[in-house]
Image (cartoon, rainbow, N blue to C red; front, top):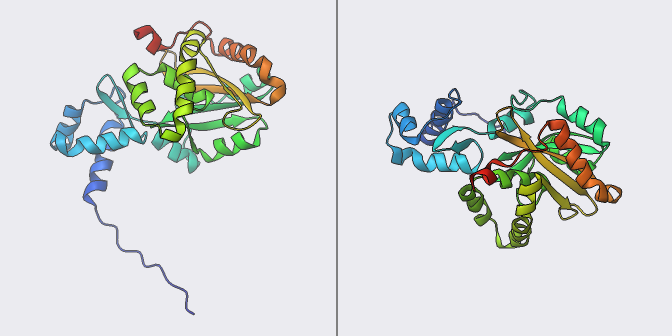
Length: 254
């Protein structure tokens, strides 16, 4: 039996692909973002023709929206991480070794990508989470300690939209997050007490840029022997980040 040969057709434009890449190219060099109207003007296209594409790119993390302005999201960065091409501009890559040395357990950095959490870096010896960080797989925002910290910082309408998108199978996790939300906002710490991976416990706190904008979350992970120490570990990380007294911005707006 002969071996099938893949014949590549010459590259050719596709209308939807062209429009999506044009949207990304337009917003990428504008850190402050573009309004939908300005974006439509730059693309010489009616707003109605790009609105649904923008919504899809927001849902998958390729774009983010803040105060009605659209800018590039973290998903393109995750793609470059998977291809080992570029490092994150927002994340200090020296953070992990310093925190790991101070807390003496596995530490991860996670960011929001669309409706999911993605770990982008890890140090320590927790195999399941090392795999997640190495492969940048998408995980639940409302079921993980890092995701809870990120959700708690979102404006109410954005948080509600994400929670409403949860499947019926995830309602218990959503309800648990909502019950924990006041304490997360009061302390800046969120926990996962073995609900994602049995006998694996974690505490997370916000990772912010110098102007206070949320970049992601730093999460410390350990086994049963660390469970009672998680609050102290979380406060130690906050101290190292200089964020011990930082209040989630969403809480300030409420």
